[in-house]
Amino acid sequence: MTAAEFKNAVREGKTPNFRDVDLVTCATCAVISGISAVMTIPAVGGADYRDCTSISLNGIECIRGKVNDDGSMEVTVEAAAVSPDRTSETIPKNYCTGDLLRDIAEGKEIEIAVNGKDGILEDIIFPEDIVSARLYACIGAGENGCALVNGGEKPLKNEHLFQPLGADFSEAFVYGCGEITPFVNDPDLRSMGVGTKILVNGIIGTITAINDGEDSEGVFAGVKVGGPSLSVSADIKDMMPEFMGGLATKSGRESVIAVAVAIPVLDSESMAALSVPDKDIPLPVIDLDKSVHVGDAGYDAVWQDADRSIEVNPLNCLYCGGCPAGSLCPRKAVILGGGIIQSRCISCGRCLNTCPGEVYSMNPGNITIKEGIKEGIKEGMSIPIKLRLSDRRRAEELCEILKEMIEDGEFTID
Ligand code: SF4
Ligand code: SF4
Image (cartoon, rainbow, N blue to C red):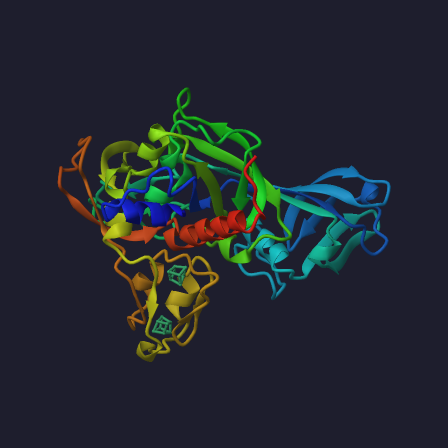
């Protein structure tokens, strides 16, 4: 079963038993900063990489590594790398590592620039020319679940926020896929460890490290939020592009990733963990203004009492100059004239706030403070969700894909 099928059965009072289910596929689709890649780049245009002083792919500077006997070179693309604003029409502003990796997965041509002793050599390579390309990513405890609020008197701005965060606890930005997240369903990490096979952006990869969060609590926005974090690795070239890509912030350094894990139903303990619904999963609420954890909400308001995706009504389009919804969409998913490129949209909700024509509609929900009240926030306080930085719809799709791969024998459990 997928996690969504399992949880819906629990909500309907039909909790599956051991005869009904042996595995539950769980997933998360998160916005993270920690995505990097190691690639082996072919020699181009007679360039001798032993003499080069720098190399870039679509403007993103790579760290040079070993030059192989066949002239290819190993390079690392760092997690926080951003292409400088440049004249190339094909490279948008704030193009980052996540965008480059998605372009490789989409099979797009890549501009390579090699700075050598004879000057700069520019050429085009295609993903099939790249000898190997492997993604490395870390999904931290915060990205697995927290809500950001601002208890200050002024809207809060920083380079990692997609838009200013409203003052006086007037709005929340939310991370986490709630009840279908792997860590929620296997809190004791009985089925996840270093070397465990998983699905990363639709392709089989492995877990390379797990921090269980016990010795060093996860830190997000400078605040301890607790919970485990997960490091993963997988080949890039056959990934499904709709699960990946960059996100345009002022720094352009965020990326999207989706990871799915098959969690076996081992005993009553694992059955109990798999039965926990959105409403019982704590959502830590962090006041970014004071950098403190001010309380906890639940995920029911985020994913049960809200819409999962955006509705579009193109007839409302005002054809306003510059299309603010399009220029401010962090995924470049808005089409002028009132459309959405579905494979790019993460249902974050930003276009709701930036389109004057009400072309886009979605109920993004509210969070309600339940526990751990302090620093001016009141129990029962309801805060409208302005932005969602996790995509439950996409995570549920990945759960389905993993389930089908298991049923078809394409993904085996060791
Ligand atoms: S902002 Fe909205 S109404 Fe204006 S052009 Fe863009 S989609 Fe149309
Ligand atoms: S919800 Fe709107 S702003 Fe967000 S990614 Fe989708 S189209 Fe862009």
